[in-house]
Amino acid sequence: MLSLGLIRGLIVGAIGAVIGMALTMAARVALGRPAWSADPVSFVGAISWIVFFLVGIGAFSDWWRWAQGEQAGDPHHPDPNAPQWKRYFSFDPSHKVIGIQYTVTALALMYVAGLLALIMRLELARSGLQFMSPNTYNTIMGLHGIVMIGAILLGVSGMANYLIPLMVGAPDMAFPRLNALSFWITVPGVVLIVLSFFTGGFDTGWTGYPPLGARAPLGILFFYLGVFAIGLSSILGSINFLTTTLKMRAPGMSLFRMPIFVWGMLATSIIQLVATQFIGMSFLMVVLERVLGMGFFDPAKGGDAVLFQHIFWFYSHPAVYIFILPGLGIISELLPVFVRKPLFGYKFVALSSMAIAIIGFLVWAHHMFTVGLGNVLNSTFMFTTVLVAVPTGIKFFNWLATMWEGKISFETPMLFVLGAFVIFLIGGLSGPPNGTVVTDFFLHETYWVVGHFHHTMFGGFVFPFMAAIYFWFPKVTGRMYNERLGKLHFWLMTIGFFMVTTSMFRIGLLGMRRRIADYDPALGFDTFQMIATMGGFLVGLSMLVFLVNIVRSIRAGERAPENPWRSRSLEWQISSPPPEFNYPTPPVVVGGPYDYGVPGSVYVRFGIAGASDADPARTSSDNGKS
Image 1: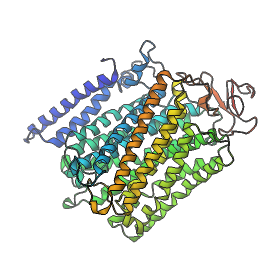
Image 2: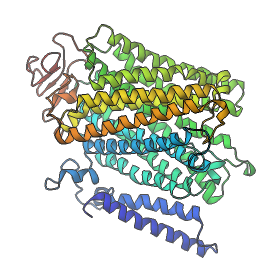
Image 3: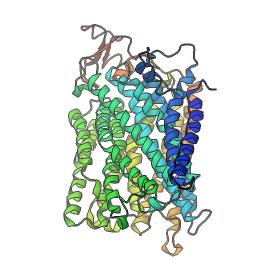
Image 4: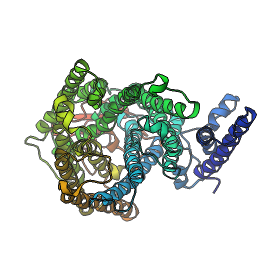
């Protein structure tokens, strides 16, 4: 078992945590202080756990050999004698292995977050406390939020890792070892977040606001450090995505011949690289308050709790677009395939992603209208909030124009695309009341905000993520999924989701506050809360159908045709699953990626320039391979 990097990393990481805690206690004794103090000893132990885990998994082995002047391992040639499954539990630099690692981990976290949501819904189904205390409820609510956000971040990285090199014609990511490191950093981060529940929990919600964060039980410390580790992974991943996209595209693939999903990830990576350190900094400052007694956010020491909100939301609102932009890219990617028409306004759709990313940095304080920023700042952020609807609207109208008079087919990926379209549209329409100062004063911290946020996340990421899994499942596995189960998954999830959010909008308008475990039965919320609970379990059932479909299809699904969707995209012009080096023959891009229905159009040729357009084995055109 020690040959598995994960097992070795867990053992070495545990040893490192003990060493770190022991050294801290020894240092405290040498300074004349009591050996045990939970926060500083646990802080050093957690940092040691992360570092030793990465050493144990082999994250630094090649770099260490290189620093000593030895021959480092070849990241592109795995051991042919090792079982294939071991690659997924070890430090493997292949972008396809890493993409699957990220995606499977993201799905596992989604199931955990969903289970926590169902526990919350059972508590809220009736007025009165059912089976948990308010503090336990707050911890479960906070864990649901942050675990789901972590799952979405990992899901974004999973899609990007697997697809970007294939879509741009590259053999791998620009920095394969750094790519593997960015995944494995998330593992100790996730462990720390889970550990927070068993070390006292936290009652701050997923935002970790001080002064609650500075006074919460020990669990909040592991929560902060776990999020910090996942944020570092996000930054490292963005470096790889940007470099690969800008420097490793196939010959002939100009920026305006790139797939729209790659454009979405380009904008996303800019946000990740620029903004992620702000949430890390805000959480680290609270940790330093707890461990070293600093007073960044403590008014008694000259600090200001509102400062935390500014730093936190400067990342956490652009982070919404880290989730959404790849999802919107998936919608734009799949629509032309199932409509059999060119993507309307390709350049506007591409550039609107960049516009959303830029404007997204200018709207963070709309989360803070009620803290007393003053009329000037409130009005400024209200304007920028409304302004972000312009590039988003460009996408919607171009999607509508793409579908107009198209030959639409309704396979499971297309159903999830259409579901995402409707759900995200409602999320967009329910947003302006939160972004307008006058109405936000009444809606702030109500279930209206919860309903809006879930529409944004499900429409902007979860439904597109499901569409992407179904669409690229044949590419990754070489097998087809079960179409009946896929459609059952869609309808159960869609109906259940609307049962949840419609109830949330209603009780939010009636004044139901979020982040509370109980409510007055005289207010009439019981019926709507019960409907929301039933809808939540329907969504949970849909995810069980999804799991059965995926597992059965991997084991015994029909062999996938070479190009089941007749896609023009570059990744569908090679075998499924793709070869280790992606493209045995170098691709040359010679046309637009979405010219469906355009007679004689060619997107890519393989081999020497001048290959015959009529040769289906060497071209991606609107006949034959499209």
